[in-house]
Length: 276
Length: 65
Image 1: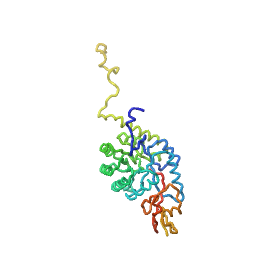
Image 2: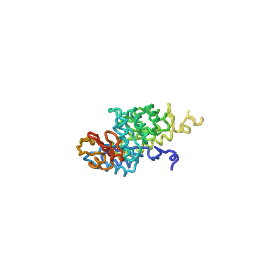
Image 3: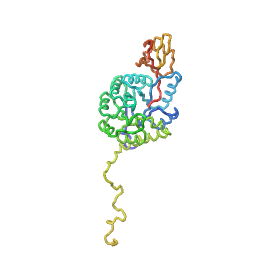
Image 4: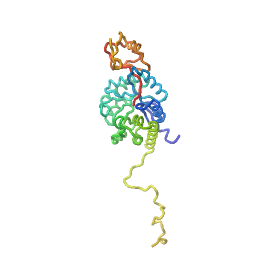
């Protein structure tokens, strides 16, 4: 084991993870493509949703459930599409019974256009779910006061967006995200939603975020399995860069190669040998 | 009587509880149930009565982000 690896633990709710990437399971072209992408990305968790059983596809849930179990990943159910605290709490309860986990990615959508979280209902739902014994990972914005309220409610992890869900725009508000990281240095912060490229995932990890949750950037790539590998490498590279401590940006050019001893440098010739 | 199951009206010959409704519908596990948007735990199926017009949701795990 290399120096530093022991200290760099990614722990969520007492569980230690070797990967800092969390992967969504939606919008793949086939179940096989999904499992290949999971295998390639080696994510800490995979996200799933709960939806109505359709009469024509009764076994779909069972098939998907079996597929999930075969991946042997920690399952993170979500409350995607919920628009009120009540809906989210009841969806979370169904997910807990179904998937046998207290973990919940809490989504309470407040706007149909940009799928932005509803900050008021989010805090309300988080408070209730924590009282019910859930381990809540709230999908939130980078708004400091909202994040503070969620922490006050007992959230042990926060998942601020980079940009609206499914846009792939990358961090829209880098200054606020970095400020959030500085002001909440001890709570795990996972960037959730809006990441489109591995370079963006790498960048937020360089800023000191603890993990990245993404879906569409992998599933809608031309080659999702290859993109899964790219994201896995990017997240790891960003984390290593953060731990390594980046250099301080300079105003002026500084030569990296030593000047001393450079050939043909006038001052290094003895005066006598110089050509007039 | 009639209840709404997963958004569709379902005429039924008087099922009295979630448990008796599930016997008729026979959903494949794993599934979870809500009645009128309230979660019904598995342990409460036998006691949870159903009334005409109730909205029942039966959900299963599926893909998500």
